[in-house]
Amino acid sequence: MVIPFDNLFALASLLSVIPLIILYLLRPKPRVARIPSLMFLMKVEKEKKKIYSSITRIIKDPLFLIQLFVLIFLSVASAGPFYTSEEPLSSEHTVIVIDSSASMQTDGRFDDAISKAKSYISQENTVILAENVPVTALENAGASDARNLLDKLNPKATVADLSSAISSGMRILSNQGGRIVVISDFTHWQGQDPVSAKKLAESYGLNVDFVRVGEPTDNVGIIHGNVETEGNSYSYSSIVKNYNDVSKNVDIAVRNNGQITKTLQFNINAGSTKQFKVSNLKRGITKIQIEGQDSLMVDNTAYVSVPSFSDNDVLLVTDKDNTPSETALSLIPNVQVSVSENIPTQINNYDVVVLSNNERSFNDDEISRLETYTNNGGEMVFIAGEQLAPENAKISLLQLLPVKTLGITEASDGVTLKDVQSTQLTNDLKLDEIAVYKYLNSTPRSGSTTLISTENNIPMLTYWTSGEGTVVYLGLNDKLGENAWSNFHNLPEYPVFWVKLIGWLGGAGDVVDYNIETGTMTSLSQRQTIQTPTGNQTTERVLYDEAGVYKVAGKTIASNLFDDRESDTTIDGSGVIERASKNGEPEIVRSETYTAENDLDIYLIAAALLLIITEIYIIKKRGEL
Image (cartoon, rainbow, N blue to C red):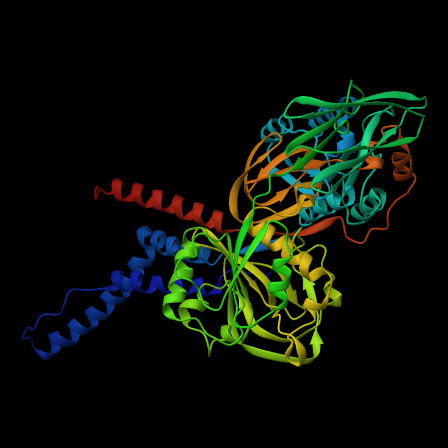
C-alpha cells in the first residue's frame, strides 16, 4: 500500500540523518610520527580494523539508533502522511432547523418548538433559523452550547423559507453526513415545497425528520398597509381580516407618541376583510392597533413612520447647462440646488455635492476642498465623464473614487446592466431597459460596495466610505444627443433614482423608504450600530425581521408584517407531515459512506517522544547526565 503525503517536500528533512552519521564517525586528527616500514604497514591494517569497528560500534550503539529514528519519525511526520478509509456517514451531527416565522408566535408554538428541539440535541449540533433567508445561529457546537442558544431564541416576524434552510443544512453535512430535524407549524412558507427539499436531502444519505407544532386557532389581524400623500399631509390605508368562523367586532386605536388620536370600530364577517383609512398622520411614529388579545399579536399593530423632512442643500458642479441630472435634482421636494462651474471655497454647508463635469478637470485646490469635505462627513456623487479618465484626472482626485478607472470604452451595440446587490435604492430600476453605449472601464476598489454593474462586471453604481463621509460613483453619464453615453436619463425611473439617492445621502428620502415590510434587507455604507425593536446590533447589512421600529443611520423606520397567509392561524399543517411520510424511499444518489483521511503524523510524533524519553533514561543510566 502506498502511503500518500500532504507535503512531499517536507521529506527533504530526512537529510538531517547525514550530519548525525558523520558526527558518530568523526575521529581525532592524525598526528605525524616516524616509524619503520613494517610497522607502518601493520599500523595501516590496524587503522582499517578500527574503522570497521567504529561503524559496527555506532550501529550497535542504542543512542545512535534512537537519535536516527527520532529524526526519521519527525521528518516523515512533517510531510503529513495519511491513509484513506471508507467510513459510514455519521449521525452524530444534528442540524436543527427551527421555523422562526411570524405564525410561530401563535399560542406558544415557538416555545413548543424549542422544547422539542432540545430533545434532538446530539454530540455535535448546528441550529438554523428558517426566516425569509436562512440564519445560521450556531454551527458545529456541543450539546451545552446548543441548549444555551435555544433558551435565547425568539420568533421573528417574517415568512419562513424552509427549503432554503434544509439546503443550508445539507451543505453543512455534505462531508460526513448527519441528521436534519425541521420543527415548524408547516402552515405557510416561501420558496420550494419543504417535502421536495426533504426528499432531495434524503437522496444524499441524510436523515430528515419533520416535527410539527401548533394547532389551528382563530385570529384577527392587519394584513395590509400603505402610506399615501394627501396634499401637504399623509394618510394610511389599511386592511383588517377576520380569520374566525364567526363575525367579529373590531376596535382600533390610533396612537401617536403614546396618545390616542383616533378610534375606529366595525364588524367584520367570518373570513372577510375591512378596509379603512387614517388621514392627517402626525410626524413621528403612529401605531394603529387592534385592541384586545388574540392568538397572534404580531399582526395586531401597524407601525407608521412619518419623518420630519428638512431641506437638503445640494451643490451641483457641472460644465454643461441644463443637464438631466440638474433637472432631476431641481424637481426633488425639500431639496435646494445650487449650480456652479467650479468648486467654491466653502462647501461644508452643503449636504450633498454632485460632480458632473464632462470636460474640465479639477485643479489641486478644488481637489483639496473635496478631500476636506468628505473627511468631515460630506456626501459626494461623481458622475462618470471624460474628466475621470486616468489620462485626464489628477491621481489625488482618482483616489477619492470607490473605483479605479482604466479608460473609456465604447460599445456601439450597447451593454446591459445587472443587479449586484438588491437595495431600496435600486429595486425600482428596470435595468433591462437601460442600454450603455459608452462607459469608463473600471474595477471596484477594496472596501467599496457595488450595487449595479454591466454584464461583464464593470461597476456602474458603487460607493464607499471616505473619511467620515460617503463617495458614490455613478457610471451612467448624462450627456444628451448623439454623444449620449446611455439612455438612462430618458427613462421615467431616472428622476425617481435621484430622489432616492439624495434622500439616502442627505438623510431624508421618500416616506415610503421609512415604511417597509418585514423580510426586507438593506446594505449600509459602513459597519454601524443600529437599534432594532428588541435591542442593538452592529452590522453592515440590516435584515428587518421584526415588527416594530428600527433606527438606522439616523432614520426611524417602521417595519410591519403584512402577509395574509402568515396571519392565517386556521391552517392545519398536518397535511405536510402526511405527504412527507407517503413519499416513500428516495432514490439514493450518494453512497452511505465517505472517504476519510486518517492522519498518521500524531503516531509518529508520539513514537519520537517515547524514543527521546528512552534516550534520556539510557544517558542517565550511564552516568552521563
